[in-house]
Structures are given as C-alpha cells and as structure tokens.
Image (cartoon, chains in turn purple, cyan):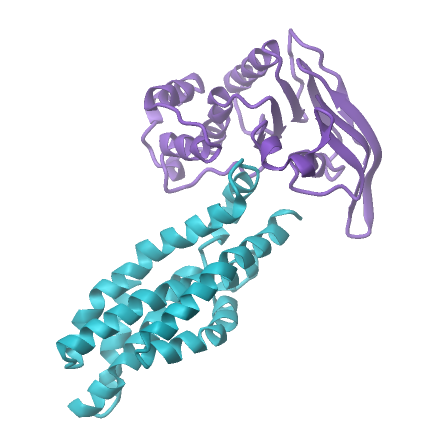
Length: 205
Length: 186
C-alpha cells in the first residue's frame, strides 16, 4: 500500500500543491487530473522518488520510500513524458534494455509477444527513430506487459495514441488491478475501467 | 573520433620544422594532446542524450546502484572510443619515427591515461547536462583538470599515470553520479 500524507510541492517560489493526502490500496487505479501546470508530473515524480516533497511523507507498506531506496524502485514502473526510448535501438532492443535495467531477464519470445500485444508486431526490428510518436509510446508501454511491478505511475500515457491503443492500455491496467496491482494515471482523457476501485485526485490550478 | 585523432596527430608535423630529431622528441606530447582533444569530442553527449530521451530517469529509478550504472557508462565509452586510440597509436608513432620500445611505452602510457581522461571528462559531462553549447563548457571544465595526467603521460611516466588512474577511479564515478543526481532529482 502506498500512503502519501500532507505532501507539499514548491517549485521556485510558487507553491504548486499543499496538504495532499491519499492512500492507494491493491486493486486501486487513481486517475490524476488537473489543468496544465497544476503539478501532475511533479506529484508522479515525487511518488517515484525523483523529487523530494517540500513537506510530507510518502510511505510504501509503512516505510518511507527514501529509506527503502532500491527496494522501492523494484516495486514501481514509471513512464513519463520522455519515455526513455533510444532512437538508435529497435523497439525490441529498447524493451530488452529497459527491462534488463530493472534486473528482469526476458526471452526474445516474451519481448516479441509483449510488443505484438501493443500492435507493433510488424515493426519489431525497425530503429525507433523511424517509428511514429504513437508507436514509440506503444513500445514504451510494452514494458508494463512484461514487468511485474506492483505500482504503475503513468504520466500522460494516452496522448498521441489511437482509440485501439487506448483500449489496449485500459485492458493492461485492468489485468494489473485484477492481480492486486496499483496504478496512478495522470491523464486528461476518461478511463473506462470495469473492475477495481478508481477514485480520482484532482489538483487545482 | 579515431579519424580526428589521426588527423590532428598527422597534421602537427606539417606545422613545425620537419627535422626528424625534433619530431621524435615532441612525438609523445603531440600524440597525448591529440588523444586528449579526441576524448573531449565524445564526452559532450555521454549523458545528455540519456537525459533528453528520459533514459536517465529510468536508470535513476532502477533497482541497480546508481554509481554502478554511471561507472558502466564510463567504461563502455572508454572501451568503444578510448581503446581504438591506443590501438592506432603505434601507427602514429611510426610516422614520428619512434623506436619499437618507445612505441610500446607510448601505447602503455595511453592505455593507463585514456581512462583517466574519460573519468574526469564524465564529471564535466554530467555537470553540463542541459547547458547550451555544453561541449565547449565540458572542455573548459575538464581540460585544466587533465593537466597532471597530460604532464605525466607525455613524460611517459607510466607509474605516475597509474597513480592518477587509481585516484580518479575512486572519486570520478561518485562525483559524476552526484552531479547527475542534481539534474535528475529536480
């Protein structure tokens, strides 16, 4: 379980949000909404441990995430605005490298089937620089299909994706919640999840 | 980068007196200086491309120790761009008319010294992520720090170069990782 209590975020001399508290339990998918600049990305980066909150604490199963360190990192998967896709590598190599970095070994077959599931079946061996924006995003999201992290932190993953891909991601999230996973999704789009509890966090401007 | 190294070291004699004794004397210095400049070329982009495409963030939240990831990147850079310079150096030594034993000494001093250039350079590269004209700033930060290794290397004092290598091996990956931390955790 992830608990955030009294989080405050100050960037420069501007307070972006303050006194934000919530708890994510297994099977929960939080939809994070708010206008541009309201701190959605900052909040997700805080939950990743990439940004320290000015005030407040973030606990994972009762222990502070900064004390857990690498143990916490192995429980999360984060896909940000810049999804970490290398132009020089193919979709396949990108997936293998990014999963390998998390200490997970996957076979070529498993990697290929994850990419096929994301609709990249015919383009496995094309360097990412020749893929469209949506296809690059799909290649990044394929990580989620082979990664057994408990907590998914997704920042605007639905942008530049077509209807079909959005459905595929919703299906991925539903499967993840069904096995007790958790997700926090920052998005301006609606999520139609049939299972799981899906409360929302709305950040004010 | 290899081509750059060869061209710099080959053009140098054209600018000075073509006296073979003089050339033999300045050869180690010229080769070392060319190696220093060639190493600077690749360092500007050591971490910046990882930063721009988001890979650095992913590295930061991976369950591996950060310092090992940074050290791994420096090692990879060193193997892919530094070692070829060492391998081609006998050819350049031949151009300057060095004897076989001098040639060997030069190659060994480069082999111990080039990793030092990359290690020190990685700190500059990490500090200048996101800075416009980063390559130039890297050179301004790193070149003065490379003076000791240049002096020892061109003087072909391999044990002293080795000592500098041992020192930088300890603190450079740590310093680079700390500098990257400032950029990523912001």
